[in-house]
Structures are given as structure tokens and as C-alpha cells.
Length: 297
Image (tube, rainbow, N blue to C red; front, side, top):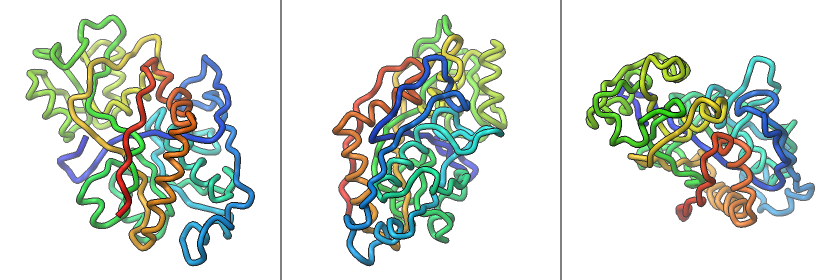
């Protein structure tokens, strides 16, 4: 959902090539959540034309990718983790692998909602995979390929809750992050909105039963449900739409087709679905069909 105070919190997704089986007891965002086996193209540099950003990255053997560190199942890095985990980092590994870059040669840079465009414009990162919704305004200043995942505002509840859809929240207390349009949307549906500084605070109130439900983008909620599938679940159909894209510099427009082709390959060979099942799918939700991707300009 977009913030009324110049902040945007969304969420996200992706993976490809080879994904090893994850332990059934693993939790999204935790160090025991499993491993990913990515096949690196050892001869990648020959696949790209001279002068392209892909060729430069392939020749250098390294890449910097901006991701979130605080969204379980999407992009999360615990205090003892060597690298972030989740849907977005796995997609980053896949893109890097197509450039011949091994996971250990990826520099991960924590990226919050407010600095995604500046990081790309200043060259501090090569790609941004940080629950990054595609918008016309963003595409005026940075490149965005995708969408590789489509989500929307949903509800997180305790299992067994009588709330099954947005139609059931009238008169109920529903929380989200203070200042977000998520709260405005549920208030318009008749709910009693409650704002908190962080998503984790809001989630804790749902677990304790202090509030009836939490609301924001479904991808974020799936990450929390995947952490605690015995107690939490995401309910109802999305009642908004957010299309997640991968950010790159407008100085390198050729990156769009490379990103699009790499993701499309992952979708076609089934590894996109494996990625979802290994991360956000641990919440118990059915694996969705991948969305149609925009054509590159």
C-alpha cells in the first residue's frame, strides 16, 4: 500500500533455476528456512553484447542488489544471517546466475522504500528487488521490469477467526502501519482502524487477540503467516492491486529485456512456482499463476 507520508511499503517474490527442497519445519525469514541451489552460467559473458550493462557485470563477476531486510518471506536478514533470505533475494540470485555471478559474489544492500530510486539513480545498486510496485511515476525516473508478482491488500487473522473476507470487518479493529492508505481503505469498509509504528507490532496484536485483523499487501502478510502457520492465516481476495517490478537504472535500458527474459524462463520451466512454494507458499496459500509481463519499451 502507498503511504501518505512519502513512504511506500509493498512486497514481492521470485526464484528460478534449481531450488532444493526446504525442510517442512522451516520458517520464512529464519536461518533454518532451507537452501537454494542456483546453477551459474559459467560462460555468461559471451551471451551479451559489448557495451551493455549486462556484459560489464558479467565481466566483473560481481553485482550489487538492493533488497528489504525486514519482510519475512520476501526479504529478511536476521542478526546471525550471512545474507538475506526470501522471494526477492532468490530472484536476485537467479538474475545474477544468468550473468555468471555466484551467490557469494553478490553484494546485498539493505534498501528501504524511500531510497529505492536514489540508489538506482546514484549507481549504489545495480538492481532493486524490494517489494517494488510498478507505477507510472517511478518509471519516469528509473526502469522497472515486470511484473513478476501481483498482490493486493488482504487480511491476516488468527486461525479460526470469524473474519473470512473484507465483508466481515465492519465494526472490527483492524491494524496496519500508521499513515498507510491500508487503514483508510479498511475504514471505508466499516472497520475500526488502529495504527502502529511497525508491521511486527501490528502482527503481535493479532496474535494476542488485542485486534481482530492486520491489513497490508498480501505478500507481506503471507510472510508473517509463513513464520507462524499454526496460528495465523491470510484470508479473503485482494481488494487492491500492486504489481511488483525489478528496478534498474534508466541509463541502461537494455537491462529490461534481459530481466524479462530471465524471469519468463523461470516461469515457463516451473521454477517460479517452486520459488513461491519455498518462501511465501509456506503460509499454506495456493501457488498463483505468474502474471503477464509488460513489454519493454
